Image 1 (cartoon, rainbow, N blue to C red):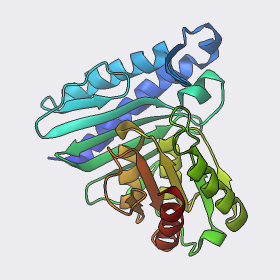
Image 2: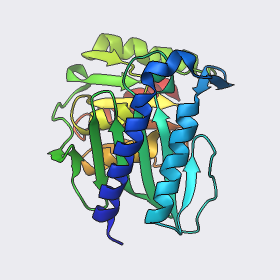
Image 3: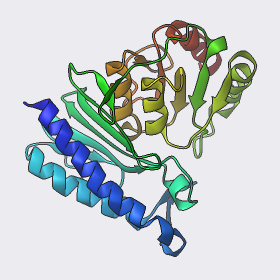
Image 4: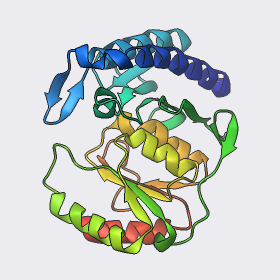
Length: 263
């Protein structure tokens, strides 16, 4: 399988669909915004974008199945599966702010082998494939070299429907407010992850995420030299609804803090 060629084809798909998404930005007040769940929104842009992505991906790898946020195709493949978020950061998009991104990963069995995250606000395309470096718009990227939480800028995401772990989560925020360079909440987990990959953030953590939120971005972090795990330090971060991403130098300290306060 020529993963580099497939990755470049996926990038072209994100460029094409990205143009459609941006063309709808000024019409946002007229869109029919649906609420899938508590504070969980979807527009016709999400749904149409997903259909466009899926139809294009079928031409690249006909045998692959799909795990897609909006459910326009969820036939799981025996070996290969595309994991798709057509618009990560829908709430940002609705309100006319950035970031918002297209996230596409390819999994072989239970391993991600390709990831593309195209953040449309700055037109930045992050990508990698198995055994490749990580790239941003054609240039190689790496995680940062900061070696302590104290020197780190940390990203997170606020829970918007699952509040059962809110109390321990607030403790993590209180800790990092006092013991790091600051906390950021961008509203797009895929973007948070690739910002770790290129060294803008030292670490990221969040719970109640879905596979399409993290599969591509987490893979790009790994290819950029970072580490990924769940809150217990295990590898169940794609389907386990919790994730930690960081550079290797901060990883152990960051994991111990999140593990202690969240578990």
